Image (cartoon, rainbow, N blue to C red):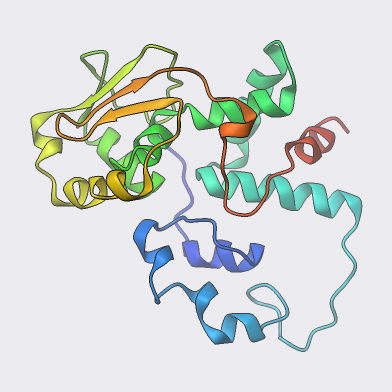
Length: 216
């Protein structure tokens, strides 16, 4: 499976905001976005601080919005385009369909319910076959879950220290209203598909810009 293997903090710096790509580290003092030097920088990584800032075109704004959403969910261009094509074929608003498809991926559900501390951690759990969907083992992080699906961990997964530490955040941070979790059994139920108002992102996402970009 193709994936980005470079420094993830660089992606946050390029967007000049936290994308929550490294779980709890993003909330700690180690996050480079919180460091004073990050605020002193006027440009993205690789550009001198005193470099002239060019005005971004409409195309550049649309492209940056697409890159931001790709980075949040950890997708490459080919994978992201596949989800966009799926969203186009569904009834309803293409932009909202895209966000719902991305949000109902298995790896994202594990992250949203605090079974995993990040989407990268969630993919690792799935690829190592710790996760079951409706009592069947799954090793596909990108599988789209449906209303009524039940996600559980095998006994081997429930004993992992990383999972136990992450689950502590259920009591403090809660989970989205369209999901239900039993932390003791590590059991998740997809109560409903998320609505646009249920989707919370670091910063703001304007999905219409992405639709306009692909419509050219």
